[in-house]
Length: 176
Image 1: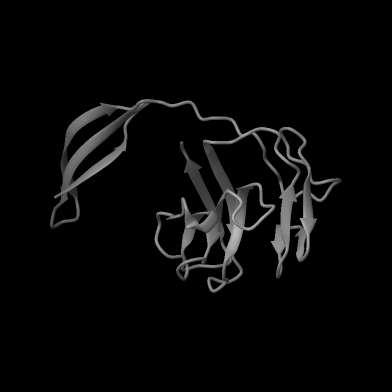
Image 2: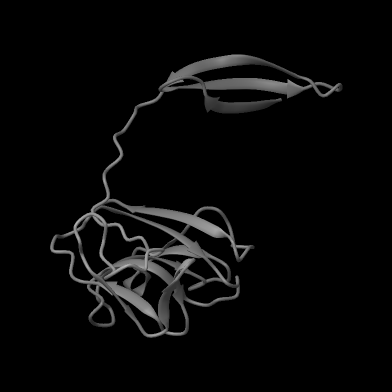
C-alpha cells in the first residue's frame, strides 16, 4: 500500500491510499481532501535574457546594465563562460534581504569545478557578503546555495548532478 498526494481541483489536494493488485490494476480510497493556501508569487526585480545579442545587455525590468568580461560571450545558445569569464551588473540601487535566485544553466561537463552560475552582493573584496548558486564547490557534482566563507551555504535538494548537456532550472530562496 502507498499513500499519494496529488492536485485535485483548484486550490485543493487529495490524499489517496492505494495498492496495486496482482493483475496490475490499482485499488484505493480517498483519505482526505485538503485546502491549499495560495500565495501570490512575487514579481522579479531584475531579469536578463542572455539569448539576445541585440544592443547592450540590459535587464528587462529596470534597464540595469550587465557587463561581459574575460572568457564570457553570448552566442545563439545564450551566455557561454570559458576560463575566468564572468558577467556583472551595475549596482542594484536597493537592498535585498529576502531574495529568490532563479537560473537556467547547462553544464558542459559534470566534472567542471567551482562554477558560480549566479550571485548577488557587493563582490568588491574577498569576504564581501554575497549569496549565490554554485556547482561543484565543496563536494563533487553538488549544487549549493553559496555565501561568503560558506556562512549560509547549503546543499540544494536533488542529489548529485549526473548529466551535462541538458538545461537545468535552479531556484534558491533566501529568507530573513
